[in-house]
Picture 1 (cartoon, rainbow, N blue to C red):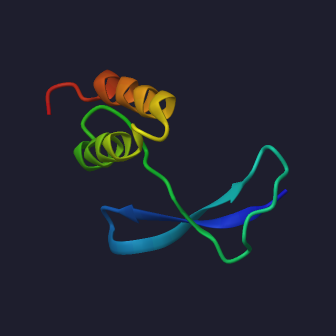
Picture 2: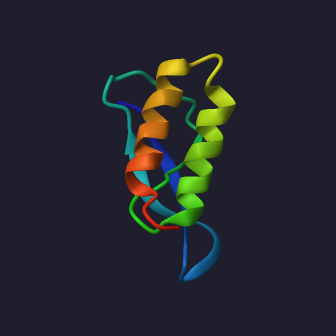
Length: 81
């Protein structure tokens, strides 16, 4: 399985840090120099929710099902931002 470095921004640090390792569950190989960025969704995570909404808007023409799924997550978690 392919593993890659995951970068995440935290409130303790400005910038990206190596916090997780990502492994593909389908066994396919990615580029060994690929980086990954995770969005941790949850109520009150306004930056992550803004990013997922923007991604859904960006991909809706090419990947309508993905955009629909992402918007469902957005509305589920957005709460009272």
